[in-house]
Image (cartoon, rainbow, N blue to C red):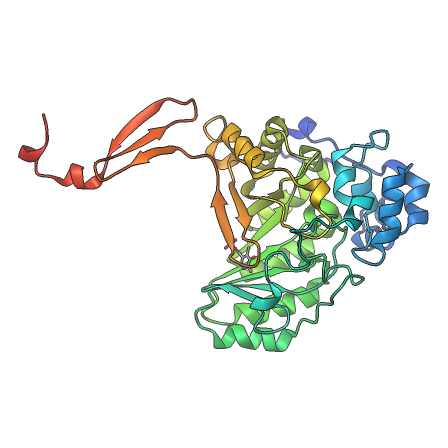
Length: 396
Ligand SMILES: *Cc1c(COP(=O)(O)O)cnc(C)c1O
């Protein structure tokens, strides 16, 4: 990879983004490797195929056997190459290789942790907030994250099935003039062919009150080959269209992903990133900071860091909210403001996203706000009523 346009200026950041390349698939033709259909057809999706490329621990082996009835195993060859096969605690491996702990739900974990199924006026359409909807267009992904918030419906082997009613969902948006923002998610919408995705986008864009379209996807990270010039040319017809990608560890920020994000950004698509706080993946401030810096270098604005939802069988991947707040505290003020996302908990049972983070307001009354900064220094800011008092009434 690392292709440079003839005559283009050299990119000094290039060397910071190593290409993953073909790795274990060195024998495969470049044209196959770079073909997203080839990547999907050759996913590692069975115990047999995983064991040919990775020495599994007993915990993983049992997890894989179990996954076939709950949340399928699937890993694209491209993403598999990011795994350090010598390291059983590899942060990439922990995200995608099933473990036996998935079979042991904690008492407070839930099938539908964010209460989405109760907020679906039409199957596949979640209408929780007044002005925007979440449109679940597919139950399939290129690779399955073991902590998936929708594992109940995603991958086709779990407890429930997603039966999105496309015509009714689009009609609902048409009828509900208060919906100004439609978020396509799933599963991963970018698994659709360009034609199928365009058909949905075109219908939504034709609705006058729909101001804002966005796509939530991990395809740029799992399958950057999918981000073709043709896809970008199609998406760009439906502006304003934004995209949220999902990256959890700095090692996911490869040359391939940077190029894919570059193509999307060049098509005018503002990119945001959502990360999930995960034990052994990104639960250390320096790792998170490095991830945020790499995102900025890829023209991706960190948007949310999620506390891991209370999905059944994710206890082993969760860290405490206290740790999460400490990590946020290590970002704010210590790095570029653009590199600081909002830390949120998606309220269990369906209250929507609630922002959480370190407290910088130490006291607040009618006269003043007492603040502390990122270094712990304390400041006072007068409240507006005091500022607005006529000059002769002010002390001094
Ligand atoms: C996350 C989410 C949205 C989008 O929320 P924003 O904070 O606007 O990004 C919309 N609907 C549902 C049901 C969601 O979970």
